[in-house]
Amino acid sequence: MKRLEHVSLGTRSVWAGEKDYLVHGATQVPVVHSVSFGYDDIDHWFQVATGKKPGHIYGRNTNPTVQAFEDKVKNLESAQAATSFSTGMAAISNSLATVLSPGDRIVSIKDTYGGTNKIFSEFLPKLNIDVTLCETGNHETLEAEVKKGCKILYLETPTNPTVKITDIERMVKVAHKVGALVFVDNTFATPILQNPLEFGVDLVIHSATKFLGGHADALGGVVCSNDRTLIERIFHYREINGASLDPMAAYLLLRGMKTLHLRVKQQCESAEKIARFLQKHEKVDKVFYPGLETHPNHEIAKQQMRGFGGMLSFAVKGELDSVRKFLPKLKFANKAANLGAVETTVGPARTTSHIENTPEERAALGIPEGLVRYSVGIEEVDDLLDDLKDALSFI
Image (tube, rainbow, N blue to C red; front, side):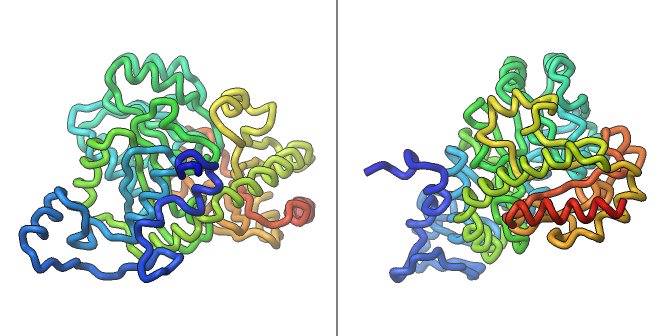
C-alpha cells in the first residue's frame, strides 16, 4: 500500500494530518476548545512544557485541532514543519518580525498584497529596516538588488491582484548566494498548483482564509518550511505575541481543505474560460491572467505551476465610472473583500486588496482605479459568463 506522502494531492487533501487526532471512533477531527491541558505528574508536565514530550499545555501555544490543520498543510506542501496564526497577515508580520532586526535589508516586489505592501512601506522603515521594492517581473533588477545583499527576499507569486509571476527557482539561486532567506506567499496558487519548497524556498506562507478554507467563514494563516529551526523561531515569536489560531477556525479550515483539490480544479478551468471571454470583450481594456498566452510571465507560470489558478483581474473601459455601473449588475458574485471561496467574489482593488493604499500609491504599483479583481467560484462557468456578459452591457 502506498504511504500517504506518495499518493496524489487530492487524496492527501482529504486524509492528511487527521488520523492522529481522531478519538472515540470518530471519523472527523474534534474541536478542542479547552484553553488548558492538565497533568497530574508534574515531571511529565514539565517535559511537555519544554518540548521533550508531545502534548499541549495552553491554547495560546498549541491545540490538537490547530495541530491537525498544521499537519495537513505541512503534508500538502511536503514540508518538515509548520505553524499557524489567527490571520494571513499575522503569518506574514510575525514571520518577518522573527527574522528581521534593525539595520537589516529586505528586497521584494511592488505587486504584493496591499497589507504586505504597507508593512514594507510604513512599518519596517520605522524599525530602521531598509526595504527595496522592484518592478514585478523584472528579474534582472530583482537579481541586481538581491546581489547587493539582504536578509530576506520576499515574493508573492501569483500576485494580488494583478496575478503577475516571478521565477521562483531563478530568484532562490541568487538569494541563497548572498545568504538571504526566501519567503514566498503561495496563497493564490495553493499547494495544489505550486510547491515553492521544491525550488529551494525557505518559508512558504498562506492566508488560509482564502483558498485553503474556501468557504469564507474562517480566518487563519499558516507558514511551513523544511527548516525546523526557522519554524521553531517563528512559533516562539507567535506564542509570545499571541496571534494564535482559534480551534474552531482550525476545524473549519480543515473541513474546507478536504475539497481543496476539487475546488481548485474547477476554479482553474472556469477562470481560463472567463479570461479568454473578457480578453475579446469590447468593454474590457486589459485582462490579467497567467493562463493567457499574452501574459508576460505565461511561460514561467507553465514551468512552475500545475495550473493557472482561479484568480484573475481586468480593467474595464471608462475605469471607475464603468465599474460603478457594471459591478452591481452581477448576480452570481459577492461584492466583497475576499477571495478563494466557493462563491465567486468580485471587487475593485481600491476597496479590496489595496484599500490601505492611497490612489497615488496604487498608481505607483501599477493598479488602475478601475481594476476589477474576480475570484472565480465553483458555479457553472456558463452561468458566470452569461452574468458577466449581461453586467458589461450596462457600461
